[in-house]
Amino acid sequence: MFAKLLSPLDTLTRALQGPDATLHTVNVLSESARASIADIRNNLDGIVADAVQLATISDINTEPVEKRVRKVSRRINIGNNETTLSPLDELKKEM
Image (tube, rainbow, N blue to C red; front, side, top):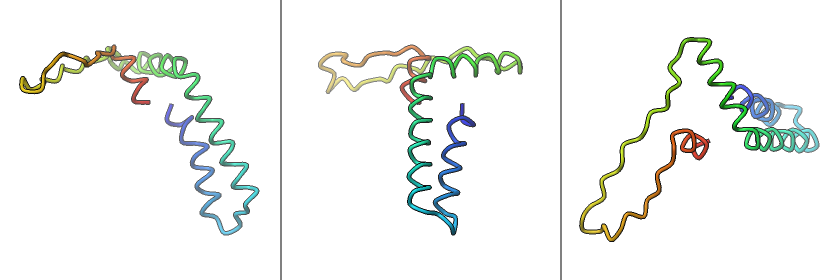
């Protein structure tokens, strides 16, 4: 996933830092990077499935670890308004 994400951004940063950077080139590369990131965001389930498959092939544990529930102070605990997400949904939120 990081290779798919960072490759267009690396191309863009190299073009921005290059001595022959033109406004047109930078504009085209930034639009391409934006489209690539939007595609990753829309296809997050497929990317997570690819990562799980690669981890399984590499014999890496893919069981998600649940976060412990945060203890809320009694003084401010009017009600438990926090929602709990599954580990996969938590990963998607962080991405």
